[in-house]
Image (cartoon, rainbow, N blue to C red):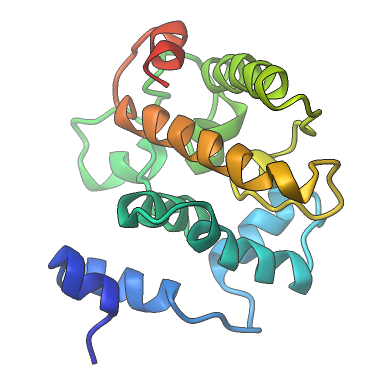
Amino acid sequence: GSCVFCVVEGCGGAQRELYNNASHYSDNLTTYQKLWEAECENRLNARSWTKIWKAPSLSSNFLTQYFQAVKIMMRWYISPSKLHPIHQQHTSSCWKGCVGKADFIHNWWWCPKIKEFWLMLIKEIEKILDIKIPFLPEIILLECWEDSYIPSSKQKACSILLSLAKTAWASSWKKRKNTYLIFLAW
C-alpha cells in the first residue's frame, strides 16, 4: 500500500518507508525513541510519545512542516559523524565550526551555535506569546508539551513558530552561516 503522504509528495523508496513508518505509532520503542529518551534523561514516557506523534499534524496543515517534524523525531537528518564513514571527503567535525562530537543531537541541540539560535528564538517567542518555555530538547525539538507551563491556547502558535525555526535551521544544515542571520530568516 502507498502512504497518503507519498501520493501527495510523489516520494519513493527510502522516503516512502520513512513516511509509512511515521504514520503508524507502535508501543515498541524504536532506536530513535531510545536515543531521544536517553538524551532527554528519561523524561519521556508512553504518554509523551503519543503527544509527540500527534504534534506534527496538530501544528500545521502544511505537509512540508509535518515531514520536517517527523524527520527530526526520527533523526533523519544526516550528521557529519554519520556522513564521514560513507563519504571520506566530508569531515566528521561540526559543520558550524565548533569542536563538539557532530552527531544528530549535537547539530540540533548541543552545538554552541544552535544553543545561541534557540536562546534567541525562545526569548522572542516568550515575548510574543507572553509565556515561559522550558529550555528542554523534548519541548523545543519534539514539541512535547508534557508537564510544561505552556497554556493549551498558546501551544499551536508556539508550535508553528518552533516549526518555522527548525525549518530555518535545517535550511542552513551544512553551512557555517551566522546564527543571527538564521534567526533573521526565521
